[in-house]
Image (cartoon, rainbow, N blue to C red; front, side, top):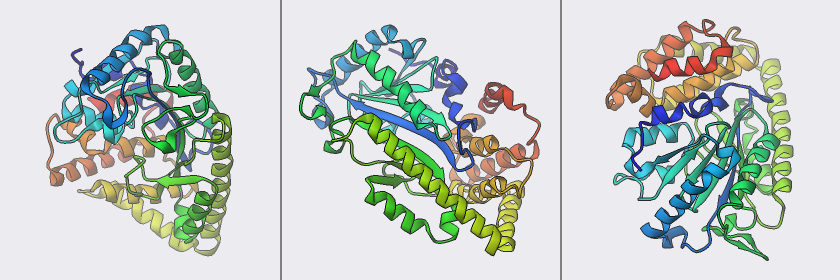
Amino acid sequence: MKARDPIEDLTAVPDFGLGWLDASGDHTDMVLSTRVRLARNLQGHAFGPRARVNDREAVLEQVREAKGRVGPLGGSTVVNLSSLDTRSRRILHERRLISRELLGDQSGPARGTAVVLSGKQPLSVMVNEEDHLRLQSLVAGLRLQEAWSLVDRLDEELGQQVPYAFHHEFGFLTSCPTNVGTGVRASVLMHLPGLVLTKEIGKVLQGLTQVGLTFRGLYGEGSEVVGNFFQVSNQATLGKSEEDLVDHLDQMVRRVIQFETHARQVLLRDARAVTEDKISRAYGLLRYARTLSFEELMNLLSGVRLGTSLKLLPGLRVYTLNKLMIFTQPAHLEQAAGRDLPPQESDAHRAAYVRRVLATEGDVDPDNFRDDVAGDLQ
């Protein structure tokens, strides 16, 4: 299959695969998104490092043939990553539609790797990543139960069309032993500046590890924490049901939200002047800077997000701040420029985009989300 241009492909996906930016759902000032993934492998094919080209291509063909009979994948698009140019793959990664593993190295992704993008719901399927299939739902705000319901239905219907590798004692078989059992990995992307500024974050993160959770950066495993954004997820997948794992994560995340809310109240009570100064400086730099690295942008956005949440920066929408995180990434800037950008030039384009968005804040109708995103793709 020859892949079409990814931007054209993404028009088949609700909000171009960026619906999770719209700041709907609960606690959107602290929780950017909720994601639930399921790791699945197919019978009859080697998986993990033992999988060869013929295994991967056979799996992809089975998925391609089955997707038309799977309701949640109605109107879906199969994007063959091995025939996609590097920038397009990076755009998919920056939108969190594919993982770092599927992005590939300098030589590109392996043959048979692909992503299936649903045309109806916030669902996707990564094909031939670490496992044959990674089913994913990605929604805005804290909506773990909804995200789980979406991917559970996809799993049930797809499992009726392709034979999953399953053991009666151990459950679903996966490449990594830590995923054996349910194969579920639920995660919540949280913004926790209050806990960081009050120096309570260490105790909270340690407490999470003690109850079977873990944390990572913006892009999950292997990524660093920047801008006070933490991806909190379950660690164990064996010994509990999918529903229990999702419910446990939901309970723990809500406790973290309580801790973060208290920390923000402490900042306003005990260090209001310092907090207001930090927020104002962050906004001023974003509003007028001429060059911005992505790491610097994320750190400044953290301050501005905090100010928006505390009502110290009226008029700014969380949706706008979410959008800035995505469209200021290198591949998106290059897509807008129509060419490759060296780091220094990329920093200048990033700052110019941020200035333009902040200068026009309030001019975009939030009900026209899709049209607004389409404008940024031009």
